[in-house]
Length: 193
Image 1 (spheres, rainbow, N blue to C red):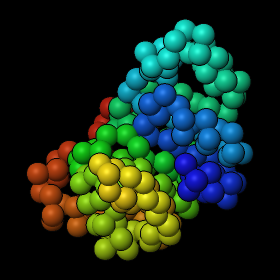
Image 2: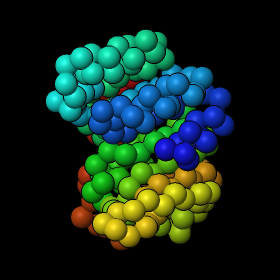
Image 3: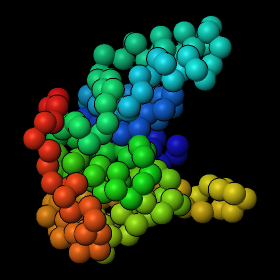
């Protein structure tokens, strides 16, 4: 959480969170950033909180989120959404499969102005996408944070700074992963926010 806190304090505009679970990161982002927070997850926050916590605690947590007028809760698959605003921070913590992380980068990179934070870098999908992004010059790694995973300390959070537009990334992805070529084309039936 320390890297998320640090970079939330550095931005001056909007942010996008992909994968909110029970809202821990969302609370940090909404508390520390001045702009609108677009939070995307396939599950409604209220149902996740109600499953995870006893009723009095669940109500208290959900009431904390309802006080933020800057949060735009979006319940959908991240690949089905496009955010028309620009945003200074992109926090990617949705599905960690290679295909989903590729789609999140492709779909959300164009409107990003500055920083992206990839959570769960120790997973194959996230690590592969970050490594390709560095290789093609899409972004540079600014910082990493380590936590224990399976008793071993490893990089779990990576902060990158945007250097180039998505055009440098797509040809490398198509070359390395041709099975995803058809799936990364922009869909026509996209919900625009």
